Image (tube, rainbow, N blue to C red; front, side, top):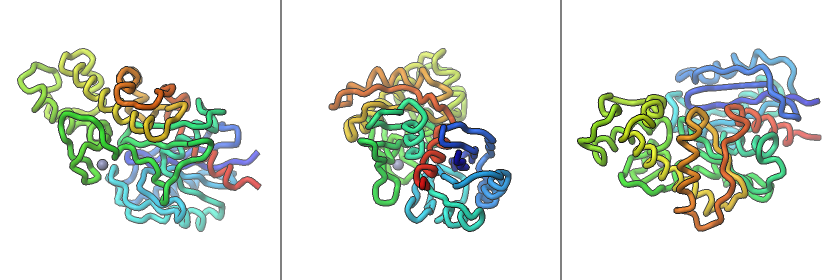
Length: 307
Ligand SMILES: [Zn+2]
């Protein structure tokens, strides 16, 4: 049996695990992403593994998967500019290494080990620090020229107010509302505009984290309406994938969705048909939960290095 290390480089956390061709994962490590010394942090984590044949990386984008470089991710405090992660790791660990956009790794993992087994066309969407997706069309991953294929977080969505996105765009980028990093600003803006003057437990707070929002929202009138607003925006975002790629299956993951499954999934299912021209596919939570990117990075590198 061949083994690979999977590495999941996210805006808030870096995770790693050892995995095999059956998708069995073990030896998990997880650390907060170090804002200053990310290379040393990755080395320290990977140094603890002993038996493996290759290393697969799923990372926040944008990146260049062919060159193995993470270019300039906007959703993190970590100082990353053109990090040559593949050549650094290949040099240090003397094994083959490949870099994928984390959501592309996610959809690869879903097809290899999750709900996408035997499904030819599928998408994976993550709600976490950012919003992203990966798509496999007719058994082929869609990568685009640099490997950032489906940055759906920066597709436009139907929204009543115009929020600036962290990528710099002043349009209606999905991530400007639903990404964990942007949600507090969106909620605050809605309380100051659409819900101005309404009584709500949410308005008492100076700022509100996504966790606090979801904890309060369903027991609060304004909060419940905000959940619907957010649900419509998410359905509109998901419909971009339905309309552009026409997949058979869309799975949903990422910490925000996994921690608030009903609040995220139900309104998407309710409203996605309002925005979709194509037949609405099956939409469900990923059974691989928080390990999907690790599983996909491992499956991908094991497939890529198969004799
Ligand atoms: Zn954007």
